[in-house]
Image 1 (cartoon, rainbow, N blue to C red):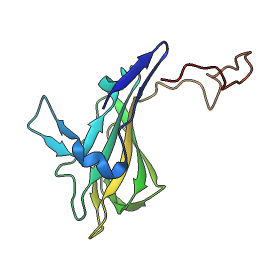
Image 2 (image 1 turned 45 degrees about the vertical axis):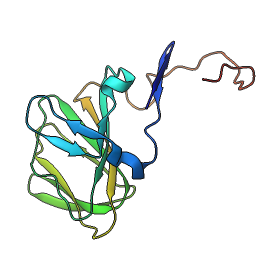
Image 3 (image 1 turned 60 degrees about the vertical axis):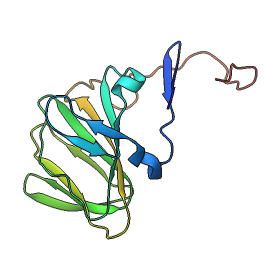
Length: 153
């Protein structure tokens, strides 16, 4: 998997969700290894968020609860079915479910399917860092849209 970098961008193709098992995350500060998890911060040189792609096999659960000191998390479920727990609240998650968890929330999730992987994208961002509502940070550029004659990478 190669990261392509240019002026003002970086791009990486992780492949299909069904191929996430090729990735193994190994924590550096605690003895933790997770198959089917890949973080994008270093691959894309992210400076404001951490994004990870995650797979959880049928019938499996995270083996621990966790919280964050500074970052809230947003879980976007892409495929499969499971349950999510924040503190003492448990709710179902399926394709299209989006969960936001505050820093202090003790979180964990599990795959309740007997046969299908549970896939999600997790975005971590500094709590309270988005200052402008909706699209106010964006600005229209006075340039006509054209796809012809561009450099293909």
